[in-house]
Image: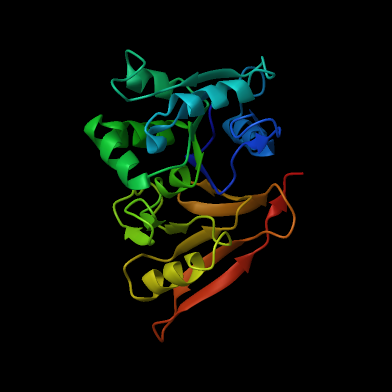
Length: 245
């Protein structure tokens, strides 16, 4: 099964931690939501891409460890360093119900994906109903652009996202004081188009290019619509999420 419409689940939600180490993960409710969006009830297929973290093997191991107690889930990964780990990248991605993209450098991710032609493959997968999902860089990449620290300590704009979604994106909106004002400034001055931001623990569900709901895996968090007003300032409107647990 695949989603009934092109679907993106763009989040500031990672794996749950079991508390026995930095990569001792378990899949939180956002993954069950992704499988539901894909219409995959029996044996959902999910592929992890850690490109944004340089295909760090420990991160890949953390992904498999998270799903080790979910034998009904068919988990796989695609690494691109030093070469693709599957013989036919296009066929592998199109065979998935969900693609989950991890965090890291969105600028590096986009450059590497384009070298391998994944920008075109992901558009095809999106149109075919594969749910495209991820956290942080794995949220920003599907949008027109957003704010990133890919280039160093200061936040800078990235304006060459895959553009499946014509909106901008701000992730980890509440995680540190600088994020909100920088995103507001870039929308206000036209560097970034109007878009949506997510607090940590919040995700955005898009059908086609339209936002249909925000979701959260913890209390007190929200999503936000950020757009440029007639007077050239940024206006932020809070969007209350549906709780996943």
